[in-house]
Length: 357
Image 1: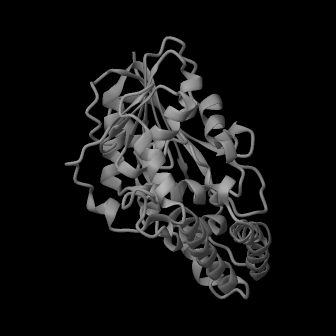
Image 2: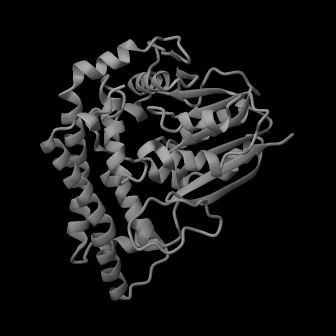
C-alpha cells in the first residue's frame, strides 16, 4: 500500500509542516493567552453559555477563532491536493484488494445514507468522508495532522484497546461501530487474536481503504457497510462492542439507537465501550470545545452532551454504565479527571457499560 507521506515533494512536505506548526501554536500558545485574558476579567460562570459573551470580547479571541477555522481549511486543502495528484496509484491500491482475502468487505450499494450524515462537510473536509473513492485517503492523511502527529501508527487507538477494553481470551466476536478507514479496528486483532473482528461504517470509501490496508497487513478483518443502529448482525453474538469518535457525529435519536443496537448485539457479560468527548466541568474550556464543534462543522457535539447516554444504556438493559476521562498521551483511562493541561485539547472520555449475566 502506498503511504502518501513517503511520496511528498519538498513543497508538499513544507506545507504540511507549516499547517502542523500552526495547529500546535494555536493549541499551546494562542489558547493559553485567551485563557489568561479570560481569567483577568474576573468573570464567574457556571455554564459555557455564560462564558461566551465575555470570551468574545477578549483581544485574542478573533485570532483564536479565525486561526482554528483557517488552519482546518488549510489542512484539507493540503491533504486533498496531495491525494488527488496521486489518484491513479491510490485507486489502483483499492481495486487490487480482493473482496474475499485474509479478511472480507461487504458493501451495500442500495444503502441510503441518512440526511444527518450527508448534510454537512464534517470536519470542514470538502465532500466529507463518503463522497469519493479518495475521500478516505484525504481523511487518513489529514487526521495525522489533526492529532498533531501524536497518533502516528495509531498508538492512540492501540492505547484505547489495550487499556480500556476488557481481557476476554474466550471472545469469539468483536464489533467496531463507525470504523472509518480502520484505524480503530486494526488494534482489535492484536487485543483479541482468537476472535472474529468486524468493522461497520456508512462510508464505502472508508471501508474500501480499511479493507485494502488490512489485507496488506495480513489482518483478518470483516468490513461491512451498514448503519451503526442496524448492523444486521445476530443478537447476543458479540463479546465486545466498541466505537471511537462516532457518537458525537450523529443526532440524539441516532446516538440512542446505536447504544440500543450495541446492547442487542452483546452476549450476557459482554461489554460496550465508546471513546468519545465529554464536557470537563470547566465552563471556559468547555465553551471552547463547543465552539470548536461549531467551527469544525460538527453540529452534533451538542446532541451528545445533551443526551442522557447513561439512562439510554440502562433503558437498553445494560448495567455498570459510566463515563471516565481518557488521557490520549500515554495513560488511558483517568477516573480522577483530565488533570491540569495548559494547551487546548480534546476532552476524550469513555462511555462504558456491561450486559448483565
